[in-house]
Length: 154
Picture 1: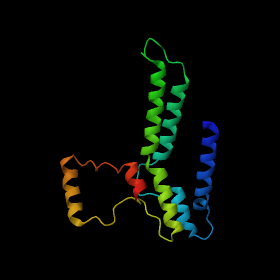
Picture 2: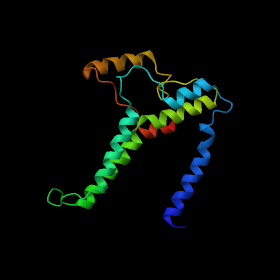
Picture 3: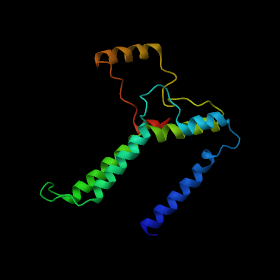
Picture 4: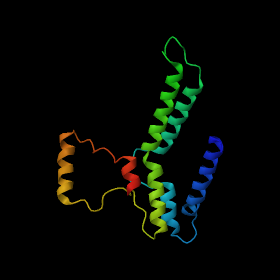
């Protein structure tokens, strides 16, 4: 089987596996809507991280499709591959797809929607105190988000 055929077969298989998650049948409609709409807490008006990621990926794709000037880039082909790698890395680090899937799984399991499904609910107050101290030391920057591999292990 050729790689394009194999990829199409795999996409179809995963689409079939995920289809039940995206059905509102038998679940709390409001929780389902919250999960799909990615209802969140406070954030700046007009700012949607998923929309920004989509636009960034479109920009990176457009950059890979234009003819880059050879006098500015030592290896135009490698630069194109690097832009593709940045796109891939960005897609795997995006929170929204993981949060939507995690919340849809929660809703299917009759659990409520949560704004941060990967927050550690067993975190002790001692750990929280250490986190607060660390945040103060780093000029009030929050700790880095968990990695995609940690999200998929949850």
